[in-house]
Length: 296
Image 1: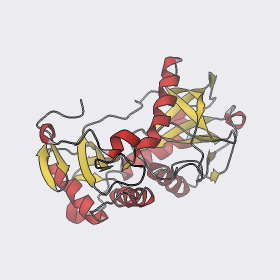
Image 2: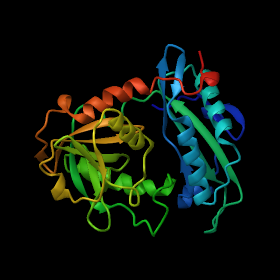
Image 3: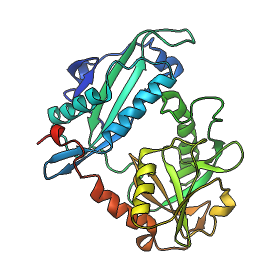
Image 4: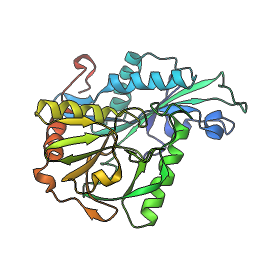
């Protein structure tokens, strides 16, 4: 359960119990999906906790709102401060944080004038669990980048993810892998994709994917470990025969993949570049990026 009625949430400048927070059934986001959101994690450490990559997440929220013509009346720094307060009010340290900017009542197909800001937090384990995943190539494609802003984190885009994940689970897999309109590998329903071959990591470039913040972190950590990373287009056939593969994302963190369409990867995850990066990632997320805002 993500909340109970006494959980404290932030809603339009007020601190409310979750049971008191209300939205209209006529909100444009509910009917048409025109809203933006983020998924952020905080991690407990000796000083209290650290909201990992808080600035990068809230900067992306600002970018997404601008692209979708949704007014976001708070600065990045204000949102970071609000989020630390939210964690404090709920006595949370290891937490998942969900900011949502949603449009008010309006049935037209232009942006609503009224917007609302909601932020909640709860304890949430790794979204895809800890066991290596069995993944299938989805029959659903990643949306054409000329049809929408695929690099923005938009509420309505995630119907695509729901379809892909539901299909995979109904067919006995843990998760799906979506291709782009050209048949190249794009990403998972809620995570970016990497595969490892002969000590090199490969991942799709920006353009047909949501360029994730965890993805960027993994690339930086790989370079610190002198692991070569190649961003390029590739087909599913190029992934078969890889040593290892994994998903990355805030909710999933770094999630190993055991097989793709029943084809097992031949490497040992514990000996892989991805696993070494994950160990370093777990250390990095606890480092305080905002010393003046850390809760204790």
